[in-house]
Image 1 (cartoon, rainbow, N blue to C red):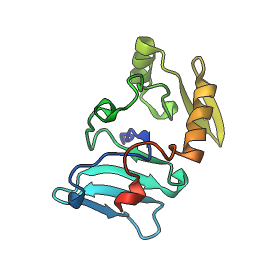
Image 2 (image 1 turned 45 degrees about the horizontal axis):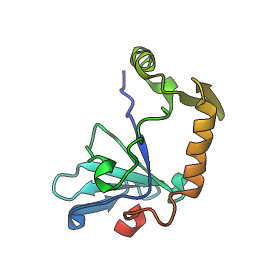
Image 3 (image 1 turned 90 degrees about the vertical axis):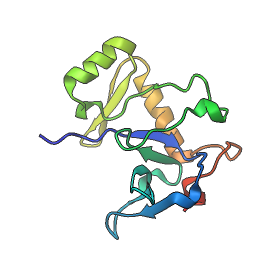
Length: 148
């Protein structure tokens, strides 16, 4: 069976050291996602889809590691608050996470959102709001587009 690729979403602000080592590409000319990779080894760092409207980036923890946002004045309470696409996760792994931390989650079936856990709908609505409106202009760092 094929393994699903886990994703993490961040607001479209980042601090990058060594910008000259970045490369941007699409897998196909008509692809909706632009990928940011390292020139030297093609490590996949993050990507931005037209679906995010320039407000967020997606990362794959199996591909790249990131330094703590606390190094850059980030929110010390910025921990996992909501898990996405939980129906795609292996059931035993999700149940283990759920029993440990009770972080709510969501998934979709035929464009209908389903929620699991306390405050899941409120957190999902906040997530969607962030994707629609993006980070505040005064947030530190550069956007994906600034780095292109």
